[in-house]
Amino acid sequence: MPANADLHCHSTTSDGLLAPAVLVERAKANGVDLLALTDHDEIGGLDEAQSAAAALGLNFVTGVEISVSWGDDQTVHIVGLNFDQRHPDLVAGLERVRSGRDARAGLMAEELAKVGIDGAYAGALKYVGNPALISRSHFARYIVERGFAPDVKTVFDHWLAKGKPGYVSHSWAELREAVDWIRAAGGIAVIAHPGRYRLTPAERRALYVAFKDCGGQGIEVVSSSCGDTEIREFAGIAREFGFLASRASDFHGPGESTIDLGRMAPLPADLKPVWADWQ
Ligand code: AMP
Ligand code: MN
Ligand code: MN
Ligand code: MN
Image (cartoon, rainbow, N blue to C red; front, side):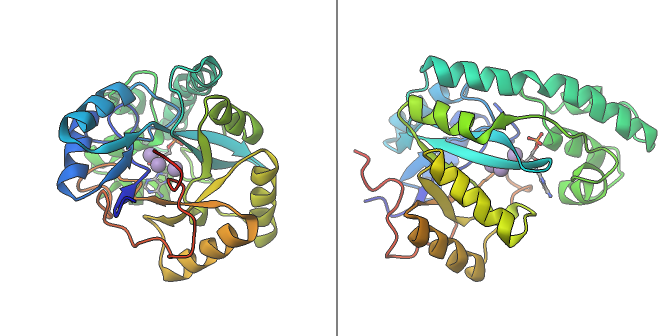
């Protein structure tokens, strides 16, 4: 059994700061012994990460973090793990989810220009490692570069979070679609960072019920943003719904993420880890 699994992180293939191979080397150096790369809506970094992991003798499984529209203009993230990355349903589904990002970015730039932040589309593109995957993180880095804010978190708080001037609502995958693509490819679907959604308790439960009903099997019980109280809450959800438990740094890069690869609390011992039945 792995002692230090980290099943959620990002590379330059989405909005991370490190190339897949560099990320894998950092995970190894941090003592991670089971890793998944989970770029947003994108699996193009997996081959490089897999080769790097093989060269280092680090256990690696495929991963992705799918953007899902849920309820009344909410976005939730569903992580897929240990799937066949060539499966046509998954490949086509992710391609469709990515395809809306460029137009959304254009609209975001227009909204930001109205509040005095000009040149944001071209500015964000300078930080993009994969033209198919322009994200709010890339805009945030540009806005920091321009001196409007000291760090990306402040940028989100002032401009990019829902309800702020640069936020543009967007239609991502449906929950059932995302879970279906992952399952069709032989993978396990996991609710990412459940503590990060601004949902009422009733909406939160409705998400767990719907996810389970769609065939979702796992939840991140330990994720970067979690304190002890949240770990207890999500462990309780895992027990109640029979979800497998995952462990996630959601690392994006040095200096930007507060929790480094593999540096999270352990899973509560009674839970069944998502990797329990993997070879
Ligand atoms: P997008 O998929 O383009 O909507 O961008 C979502 C990404 O923005 C997330 O995966 C995070 O990397 C980043 N993000 C969202 N909210 C925040 C926040 N409050 N502080 C820092 N980064 C954030
Ligand atoms: Mn991200
Ligand atoms: Mn996420
Ligand atoms: Mn993530």
